Length: 88
Image 1 (cartoon, rainbow, N blue to C red):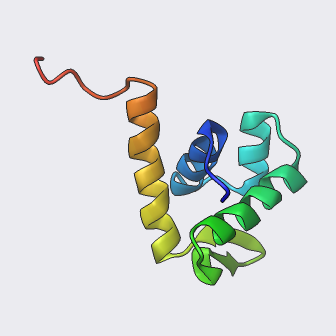
Image 2 (image 1 turned 180 degrees about the vertical axis):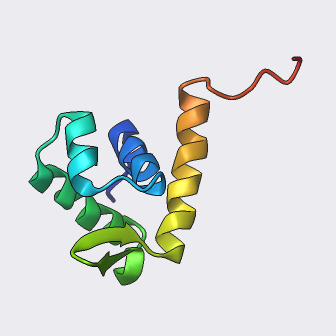
Image 3 (image 1 turned 60 degrees about the vertical axis):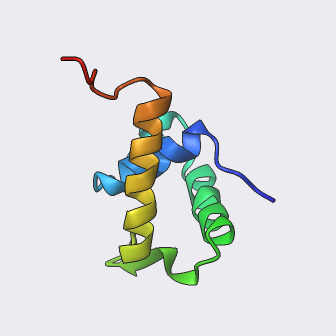
């Protein structure tokens, strides 16, 4: 079974923020084909053909994909300790 890594969470977070695949690849220092490979990985992991939609030559998360991107954002916050301190 394929699993997500931290870079996957970052990619999904950037996509949720409206970044393009090219912007994501530039941000992470990955090649565009490496980012495209991750898109295929997400479709396989989440078992959803419609994880991404092609709109004007650009891949954007579908409604389901966006929900997964938001979950990735929350997971990344926890992993990087960005969660607000509940005592403040």
